[in-house]
Image 1 (tube, rainbow, N blue to C red):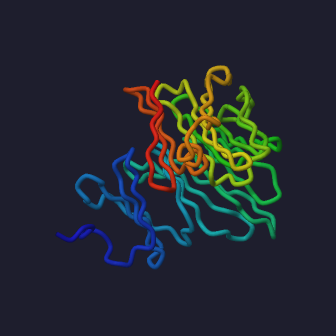
Image 2 (cartoon, helix red, strand yellow):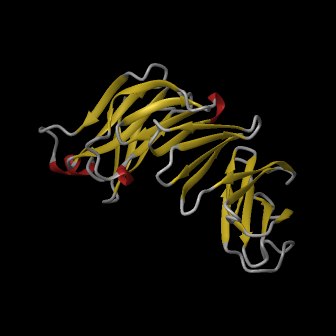
Length: 264
């Protein structure tokens, strides 16, 4: 049976699966529209027609639609993912020739990073714009239910609130010697109490277990001289880090196709 048969019969440029909201989003640049479908039935729910659609983000039940730069302004629209109704419309001023590095949304908060400019945090409910020049993020981990953000920087790892205020710094998570941030992997437990971070420093990999409440280091997994060669090499090439909530096992996958498990 043909999927998406109820929608617009044009080529799809981007397909995004939004599992938390049970939606599929398809971007049709040719017809300048974004269609939303039910993930369970593939039925067409609604279509948003917007001139010059450039990108979109989904966070919980909020869809942020980003339009192309127009006259030094970057138009953005907040939409309810359930019914397609517009929640808020705003423009972000971009000074030529500044380049937008990335835009992320965190519930009603939008993070905007422009090249060579401080990170800006925009609260779409209050229209408050905050600059956070002290934050030089390389990666984020959003703690949605607590409205907190775990920020990974070149120097280390921090916990901040949604307005960018520093709440705590994680002990022993120093990334100053990390040469490739693409090798960084992390996992937050379901109870939001522990953060597991995998990093490689000077060729040696390790896993740090941190307490999210106070930032303290609870434990570290790293290769020992007594370990066999296979295990020492495996910790240098981790691609996926996972924590099993039921068994308390720490599980990693490697570039060699290995699965390593540490029992509690």
